[in-house]
Amino acid sequence: MIDKNQFRGHEQLAYFHDKESGLKAFIAVHDTSLGPAAGGCRMWPYDNEMDALNDALRLSRGMSYKNAMAGLPLGGGKAVIIGNSKTDKTDALFKALGRCIDSLGGAYITAEDVGMTEQDMMMIATETDYVAGLPQGDHASGDPSPFTAKGIYNGIKAAVKYKLDKDSLEGLTVAVQGVGHVGQYLCGHLHKDGVKLLVSDIVQENLDYAVEHFGATVVATDEILSVKADVLSPCALGAILNDDTIAHLKVPIIAGGANNQLASDSHGIRLMDKDILFAPDYVINAGGIINVSGETTGDYDVNWVNEKVENIYHTLIHIFERANQEGRPTNIVADEMAEEIIASAKSA
Ligand code: NAD
Image 1: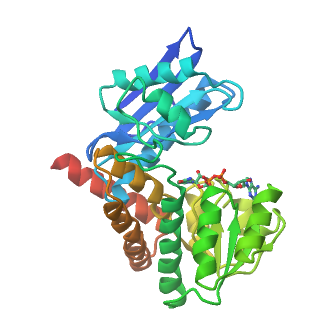
Image 2 (image 1 turned 90 degrees about the vertical axis):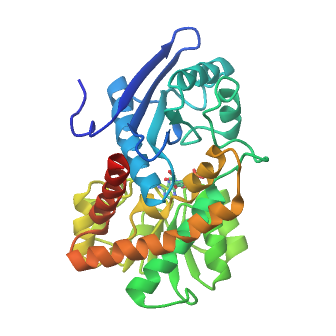
């Protein structure tokens, strides 16, 4: 029943159906060697249950790698709810999900992902303690986007240092695809450093904000991936680095926050062959989960979070160096480094 390629080393896969609320959800726990499996909950109108299951398996493995590379005491997991986040949300549904998460006894800790909000997390938290991403407070961290953006900004600096041998971003051009939560905060950092910004989005309001506050130049959505710039920073959609788009890229660096930017692992090889430095997405966009991790200890410390977010710079430099020495793509090297961290925790 399960695509074997997706089911790689997972410890647990649970399917929940609550008849009264209509909840249908999968929770995948990929690996808990480093700590409880943490990863957001996604609500999406999947066409069928197999699509939802495969997404849970794929995303939970990604979370194991992301948490390992960020140096967090967390394993990888993911919850997916089959449903439309605009029309299907009810308190009963989230309470039911809270009971499902609680029944796993702490093996999985949830937080926001696509389609979920802080308010939804609060409703889930009425039934279980295994929730992060709650509104800001003594033990909670609030919106993760500023931390994600800061990590991407540090990652762009690392890539620019490594590839262009520059210590400053001043005068460079960065093309940002998607100026939503993460993209806007990122533009703020880059603008302060004197970067020329090219931005694209499908929401006019977001473009207006970037033009007004960061002096950005708007580029059409079908042109942003082929503009000439020093850095392309994808901050909108996944799978945008594919057979069609890679041929048209005119940048030496790709460093952005969107999850799963490569359509497949082999597209990392295509980028390497084109001499484009790719910052693996789950490494550079870990700021949000680092912040969430700060919450899971029950004693939120913003200094600890900031230190880990700063460290994204060094982790990326390490990946770039190893990839260069071994003549292999950065995405594959990052996966291997994550697997090594998990394997050593397992054997310990
Ligand atoms: P968001 O929805 O706030 O922003 C995404 C933006 O992309 C929106 O403004 C949207 O209009 C725009 N967009 C959609 N389709 C587009 C297209 N074809 N061309 C150009 N723009 C388009 O989401 P976000 O929270 O800013 O997250 C952005 C990306 O980063 C996502 O892939 C997300 O999974 C990833 N990410 C986010 C966080 C976080 O802390 N928010 C953490 C890790 C990864």
